[in-house]
Image (cartoon, rainbow, N blue to C red; front, side, top):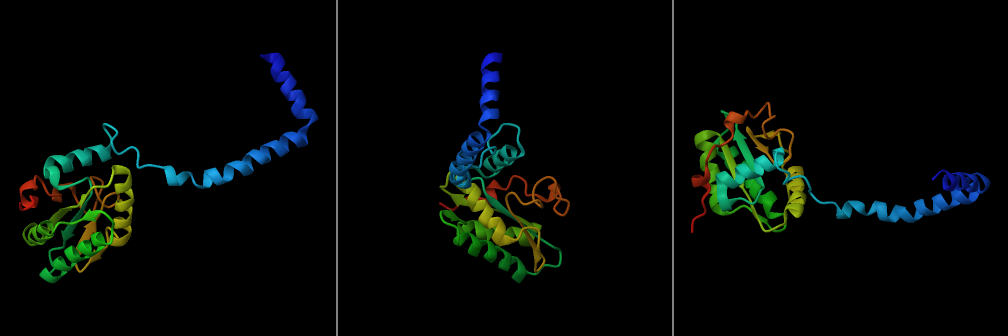
Length: 190
């Protein structure tokens, strides 16, 4: 192994400009491929056993069964929030979801969310979609950008998938306020 490496070092030393030109050519040819690499990335890691994303996905499946497809919005109303502000928050989620291809908020879920906000001040809106988990990541990103999670509007705060304010680490939204076993409240009317 020493002999071939010595010959390679000698070649590179004698023909530095050719070696440099070769590397520059490789770099120039690789740039178009590298710039488009993000088009081929997936939302990997969401199904890794033991990950937080997998735990949330399992909890959604357990609590909402077939009613949710891995994406949801949590609404929390402050004690002074009025009925109009609560309805407006659900309406904002409905309008935002309407602008996302192949993701829906079934009307019965929206109505039940308004009722849950009045009774318990917390409502989970499970969304439906036939998108693959990779494409659902893009939909969740759009949802997060549109809803401005963590910002209160009229006393109602929305939390969306992947927002720093959602999940167990949320200081402003303690875990004990997350809805528990509400599958019956979100069953679709058949």
